[in-house]
Image (tube, rainbow, N blue to C red):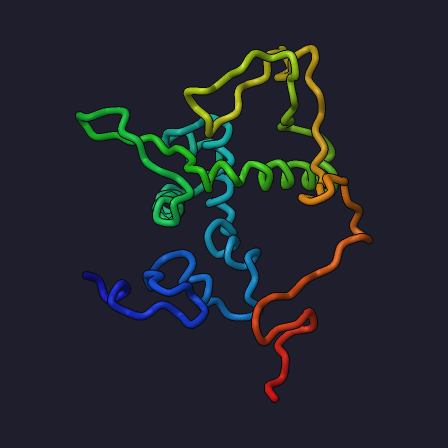
Amino acid sequence: MSAARDSEAPAGSPAGTPADSPAAVAAGLPGRPCSAAAALHVVGEKWALLAVREIFFGNHRFEAIARNTGAPRDRLAARLRSLEQADVVERRPYNERPPRHEYHLTESGRALAPVIRALLDWGDRWVREDRPVVMVHEPDAPERHAHEPDAVEPGTGADGRGRHAHDLDAAWVCRTCGQEIAMNTLSVDVRAPGWDRAGPVPAG
């Protein structure tokens, strides 16, 4: 057994958490305990999120991911390994001799779809002057990709859009009342022991 697994998980980790698990690593991060920081520790590096984007777009093989992200091959391989260790992606064999694998999103990887969508929106609005990639809703499209739930389908129109494709808007919706919420109705509920919104609470 490795030394990492023999060591104790950082304070704040759930009982029985392996020392090298994402939860244990997140508990040992410096600064404010925060799920955003924990998520960025897993997927915050540029090549990691771009790899997730490509798999989400339906490109599962290393060559395609490397080509479409522009990532150096050694760094991309390292990012894919770390994403696999964090259970964001999984490898599936597609060739036995020589052995070859494809990369697919796990349940937690598929849950990053709204993150990719939000980054596309932000880039369209604040960085680029065009919209090079557009995700749309096609309400009249048949049920698709049941065999491949971790990837979106290509658009059906010549410009990548169907005739009845609808643009999307990201929205925050209250889980309790179902209302779409505005920024000025939000508050921050800090639940980490020893912290408030301003930072660490002085002892005593």
